[in-house]
Length: 76
Image (cartoon, rainbow, N blue to C red; front, side, top):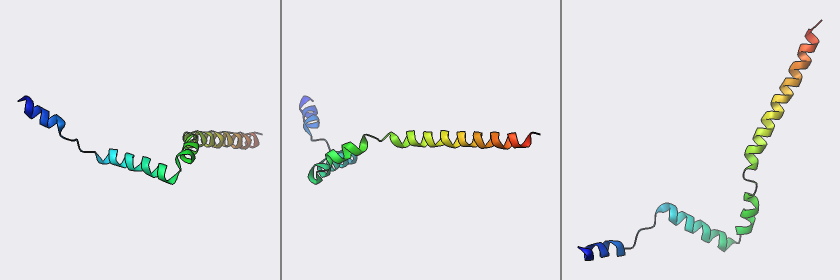
């Protein structure tokens, strides 16, 4: 019984597609010499969400300003 378990555990585990892709990507980055460039680019990866939120706040504020102007013109 223990020899059977030994054979099963000694059997080489297959690499998943995800693991293989990750390994391939790491190798590609090293071969192309783009590791540093990607690291610099990824520093601002949260920037998109922050910019989008900022633009939404600006748009809302602009709407409020224009609304206030319209309302002030309507009052006698």
